[in-house]
Length: 554
Image (cartoon, rainbow, N blue to C red):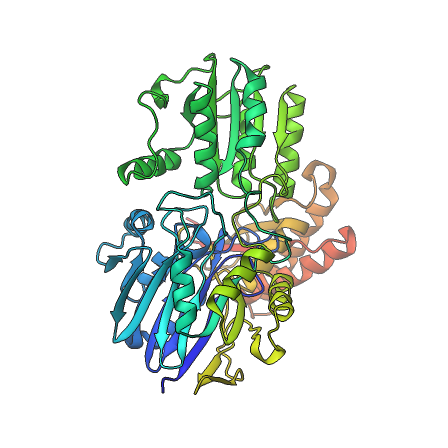
């Protein structure tokens, strides 16, 4: 009988960075490769990706990676993985277009990409795999079942139960879920982000009824509507309302124009001809227009703030504009959202901000999760995706449905659940992981010392002391220059600067006199003395950077 191991390299006790691994004997399957947006403690870090070391060390056993849908938290770390190991990628039609773009932008030209149907059955390395259609904010979303001799290992993907989603690219295939469940499921991995929410998510994810009175009231005036870029279901609701009220649409962001083009090419969503205003034809005095502004996370609110202060390249706020924020504030965006509202009110604008209860994100609430449990009937239940409180809420839900504690498995990132003979035999194995921090476009080492330096600079500032010596005599041949940033205002601190210059001068002269001068050691000695002096005088510990240049004095 197969030996099955299940573990996560990211996504547990956190929001994002999703990556799950299923091992069936010696064959490794990866599900998703996402990023996480860091909190303010990781100064300057753009995003965080999973630790790939285990996968790199075992790359010869990897059969492929599945990308379930086109969202950053499940797909955007893929280029960083494929730069290190070339493995097959399996995904849906719509998502494949974004994968192509991501890999092209990363300079990856050779890769293996398989486009799979939302509901299909095939074999990889002798292992039967079944995909099943699930409803989410992105079209072509699916879950995955890996068939083993112990039963299926089912990854639900991100989903809601919505009986009104009738188009093929969004509809959940309940029959397939039931069929998989009837054949026997060893373990169900189900997401937890909205496990604290009562009832079903649908229809609370729909905003048409809330948008309609706003469109009605706006008359011929402009509407500036903001939405997270990847909430495509919601964006289509906004466009549907613009069609109904015969308003033309200006798409502020190039990426959204490309996304709508992809939807059109696949026949998933088609806009009336001439409804979209080309960028070179848009004018700020146009009436009866919807300006659609999209972005990721806090950048969405920053874009609206820029429009409100008339600093945007294309859009200037008009006094009769109505601003509609259809994406509720989430963790990490509160500061930018508040600043945005303040800027809008300063300009006399009207704003409607949808709260989470008015515009629920398309993740399963309690009754959605219960339905998945009911249909799949797993022997073991593994909550995934979410902060620890979400995982606990999901576990409690399974408990309320009659699952014993030993059948509910709560894991940490890197903790391995091993199954043999249809039983969980161990969770003792732990793979050591370290977050990989992405700083700009490259995966630089920005851990430890670098982040400490950034924190240091952000609180106590920096002082740079520069001096030039004669390379032969080691005598000072130019004035000592002192520059500070974020420490003191130089004009108010003449005495401070003079004493720092004096410390630097004496340190060098004494080292030369004692015949022990060494550039690095002298700089270290000066740094120590100046740092102690600054703490005594200012109570601050700025970063002190002495620079000693040696040149030939001609």
